Picture 1: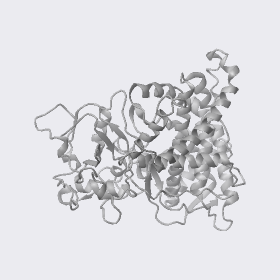
Picture 2: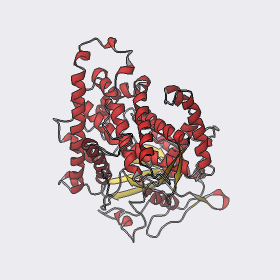
Picture 3: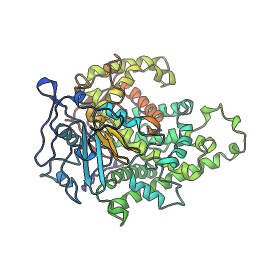
Length: 549
């Protein structure tokens, strides 16, 4: 069956608060100062010192605190804001290569940048991890974010389907009511571990599938990103609703229509969300092509999620009549969806929203992260062999099964993932809405300012990481003095990623099974990323898989 082909949208408008910056590093001039070059037509901010010299911590109001308007940034025009800077061929920035754009802004303006994208949309970028820590310190009990705006409107316009906009765009007390009930399930270690046998089975089937479809001579596998999307859809379905959807068959590329529809719907939704979050937001007034695309994708995800929720409710009719204590200790027998229904306190509409959010977030994030993990290992064979030795040793003790004990002892595996998150995180950082006036780096930051942390670009700076461009998992084993607010792939604080345990379990298991079985090679060219809501590989994934035994 012909593999799914995904086409990138040709219409590019400003991205959401999830920016994507990656390659490149700060350069130090004489005296150890961070050097930069201001572009013509922009408001330049000569750097008089290093990041250390420039930093002013949050603190009480002082007479010398400078106004928000003095924060340097690209010149903004009435109505169009800074959009003219992003025009193809003539603009100095690019929405398709926001990682290069971000590095350029750091060099031009320094570690704090203000940008008025269009009228009514102003963003503040932070690069220093200590300023990022300040942002988290003032985020409050109910952290606020500005993202997934069109998704929120889609759901609020359909009260017969959803109670709220969901975990991603909702703010305030209503967000917390959903969050605390959902995390009651997803933060339960044993609940997530109970899905590990099924996750391991899917990962082994994926490794078998590679064996059956690779080129006999070279080991090359075509359309690998499509296969990764299949893998993480299957893993997400198994972990969430305990259903094998049929995306991964041990010896065939066959995929059923429902799985195909879900993959395409998730891609349509993510592609639409980034392009509707900012810009002129005409979708608020008319049904634009991008908004129609979002509606199409979300309708599909809702239809399929509701189908499995109804089926599970039917299965649980007898369980619902029993006392909760009868199944409190039977974690091994319940899926995440069953716990949502039985114990979370969420009503059906909210459960639908959480499941839809999980499907939306779980497919591409997992697939893209696995792409970069395998690329790092394939282009660093010494590191790959160290991981393979660890994986084979641990699996030999557990009859080839990835168990909770295997995951607990896989130290080098976790270092590999952490280093991959440093070099190629899922997104540029985290967005927050400042809820009270505060001071960062000597500037007054007014309430309701949208702040976007620039973790990805900071993680490539030699200020923070020696040999910042190199893939060195050992830096996480040697307990180097690394600021904890630099690498935050799942965020931090009350609004950190609610599905972190599940996501990491899926990734760890897939990587162990692949590396233990295959020597992974790379025959492609340079691999970078572009932003399609999250960081996505910008070139075909040309991996080879040669059996180790």
